[in-house]
Amino acid sequence: MPDHTFRLYNALTREVEPLVPSQKSEDGSPLLRFYSCGPTVYSYAHIGNFRTFLTADLIVRTAKAIGWEVNYVSNVTDVGHLTEDDTADAFGEDRMAKALKSKEGEQFANVWDLARHYTGALMADWQALNLKEPTIRPRATEHVREQIRAVEVLLANGHAYETDDGVYFDVPSFPDYGKLSGNTNIEELVVGSASDSRDVVVDEGKRDPRDFALWKKDDAHLMQWHSPFGWGFPGWHLECSVMAQKYLGETIDLHGGGEDLRFPHHDCEIAQAEAITNKPFARHWSHTRFLQVEGKKMSKRDGNFLTVHDLTAAVEDGGRSDWGAPIDPLALRLSLISGHYGKPFNFTQAALKVAAKNIQKYRHADDAVRESLEANREGGDNLKSPLGDAYADARAAMCDDLNTPEALAAAYRGVNAILSHHRQEPLSSIAAQAASDFLERINSLLGIIRHETDIEVKSRDNDALAEQVDALIAHRTEARSSKDWARADEIRDELDALGVEIMDLPTGTTWRNKL
RNA sequence: GGCGCCGUGGCCGAGUGGCUAGGCAAGGGUCUGCAAAACCCUCUACAGCGGUUCGAGUCCGCUCGGCGCCUCCA
Figure 1 (spheres, rainbow, N blue to C red):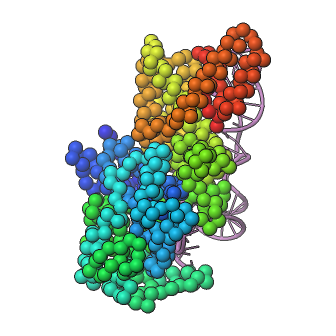
Figure 2 (tube, rainbow, N blue to C red; figure 1 turned 90 degrees about the vertical axis):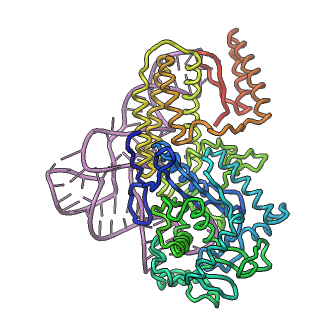
Figure 3 (cartoon, rainbow, N blue to C red; figure 1 turned 45 degrees about the horizontal axis):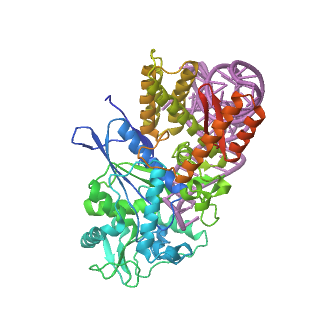
């Protein structure tokens, strides 16, 4: 394995710089220790969540492609994320409890039930979009003991204090606070929020407006634990740093999340973790930009929210027909990774259609290659070298701050070479093997050709449809051989009505679902 | 007010000072009963104005325009 540099924008230094694993795995290869902030499971994950998770996924895939091992931890937040947490204040309502009271929440017996449901939905979406499973996916509620211990340490070493309402981190005791976001000037922060004529509620017991909750005392809360500071629940910022350190060590290589987490969440994590260990918490920080939908910011307020479920579910299951549901999950994946993670991305129907078309192109190549492997034809190899180059280009692009557009361009070059050669002359066994290797490697780098986990998306309905289509095609082939063009075209119209598109190839007629 | 991003051909979107990114659409072709699909060919742009340079989409300055986070939200 040649020496590879994986360059990634580091929010801490504001520069694209090499990502450097500080440890080795058992076999001596570099070991990347990576924590990516996961979602609060109070609802279905939306496509913006997944843009962030996909960035993490691509980081993991790229690291593996250059021979690294990855310890990849991504959490599930199922307690403590308050609606007003982003003010660094923590006076709002718990998102989980609030969700339970909403209309969708009525179907759940309690918050635990709700969390279980949406965690399951998250995992299903995760698989459908072909994301690698994290090495560990810890839940906040399963690490309350560790969080309480962290609060105790912070109280003991003078970085936290207790009030009637809870335990707060003492921001002035940590002079580096805000170093990640650049929000170091408290007056400017206050001016900024005040300019929105927003009510800034400050807990009376807090010593500094920036101080944030480590523990909230609340013996009426739906999720509560006993602690030395009374019944209550841990602050949202605490879980990530505690779980990251538990599973990855005191100083981790890389920490990522959505851009909104940069401040205050990540600055708070840094403060907590470093106040405990006196060591750097993470050496590299990465944030994924928000996406827009048809040029507008996706926002719950405006209701232009798109969940993965909205797009990939059948219409009977709540899929959105105005968005063409059910969309091929891989097309959604391709669409979401077609822009650079560090730039705002505009998610549009037009782009989604393009992605669906290109996914078909990959499938077409994949099918051709499988067929050629089985056919075992004689002949030389004219593909190995161009495909080797294309893969190397794709990987190099990914190592260059996850330049997905350029990586995809290289992947297209490769796929076009395969299709082009195959068109001229069906692939020889040896060329097909080269093509198969290429598709395999591109797939493990970008995940856009086939699912790695064998999830069966096929339903019984689809099987029934397949039988029906095959029968119709057989009739049409008969009609064509007797030159009954009217009958043949009639059958084609019937297939069209079923949403099926047919292709008359030299080898026979094949079909696929229309885009 | 603080922190940050962007303006590239019909559209999306790379471009790390000097050689055609790529995709989609469009036009032309090959194939085909027709159609579709597939494959082949064509399509040279960098918001404006200055500057640095032998040479700038790429660096610097200014102008104009758009956007994000700091608040729901990844």
